[in-house]
Length: 114
Image (cartoon, rainbow, N blue to C red; front, side):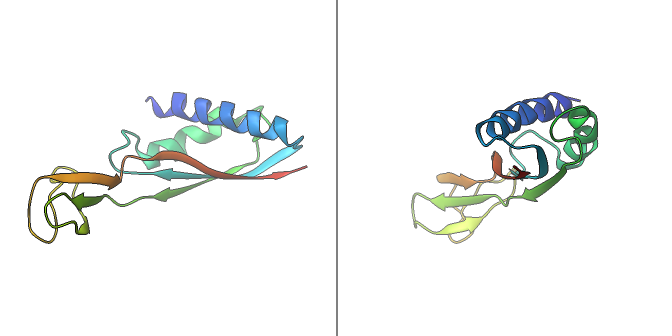
């Protein structure tokens, strides 16, 4: 379960932010996760309580926003939704697309007490 190491890295980043803002505790951590990120949101939620123990985020809530897969077609320039194993244009069906979103693993924001 590599989600535990992902949570530990996330908390390292949160601890740095908390130190920069002289925070006394972390209330909420907002994370964006795409289906192509290689991380399972449910496993991330399961690993979070273990990773946050004895940290400034011990009472924090992890809020995960699951991002959709979006592509831009290089042929017709349409921006459409796509499936993980079929990154095709939703308008013309062309395979020459550019991934716009869906591979995120992004710390969006942190709510903290100072």
